[in-house]
Length: 351
Ligand SMILES: *Cc1c(COP(=O)(O)O)cnc(C)c1O
Image (cartoon, rainbow, N blue to C red; front, side, top):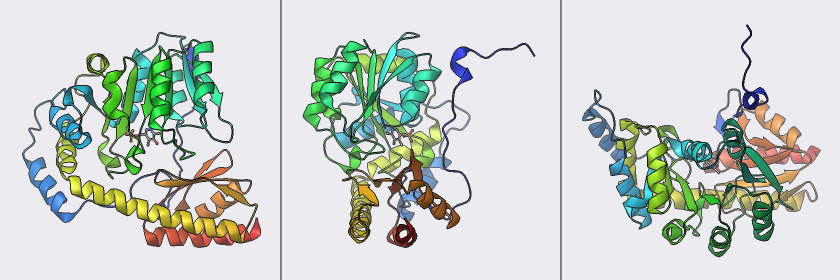
């Protein structure tokens, strides 16, 4: 009865995925594509051969090698995680001391602040003006607050805007603290700095198979850094952090380079369709929302009608993400997009 929670847990808020029963899921930035029969057969064969009585390879070597090959980098600088979420949590737990400051921009991926708090760190928030991450402001704030970690997504979730390679590298170059660039959506764009990490002493790039690769179910992410930081990450992780099923499936899917490229192209094509159709709605219903350019698999709409649209979509069993009144809508298949667009247009008539 007398048990009292530690301070850091008293105000912690759970990550809240959109709840309820939906037929169309455009809220979690997942891929709408399924693995091919051919790849599924290959997986079926491979999972029969897994040694289920044994622990997995602690270093996930096979899947790291495949990922390194895909990116054209050395496998020694790649570490696998149980989703990039695990890697964010590992970084927060180990690359700062209790009470240290962590610089997070807002709006950005909500889990940065969550993990910082749960690890007993003090998040410092840099508010973005008009959703744009200002390089100079970020550097200045990191220095001024003596932050030990600076973390941001690039391209950004939820704004879907992007900083250039040069800008991100400049941030790493001008700061002495750890700089973490989360490239969860970089597979839809072409400005990855994963191949530049060895030139810096303080840069970690995070990647995931959950978005462009359509593997959210298996929980597989990667950290790319220099050898020193990769070594430390491998030392502090739990020994068998990526299970054998995930390693097996990951290794197979990552071997299918052409397939992955086709997926990316299909998703970008539907994303472009979604964007263009919403742009038409913007012209038809001016001043109701602002649409931001997109470098990801989702679009971001700033609007005062967000809540209304969200509730209406929910009633139609379509899940989209409501973020402080704005909407983040991920691309689905053409049918799913059309279904959502029809409801959106209906809502706009009443906004
Ligand atoms: C989806 C997402 C992640 C999480 O990826 P997992 O590998 O599925 O844990 C990390 N960062 C950002 C910005 C994301 O949007």
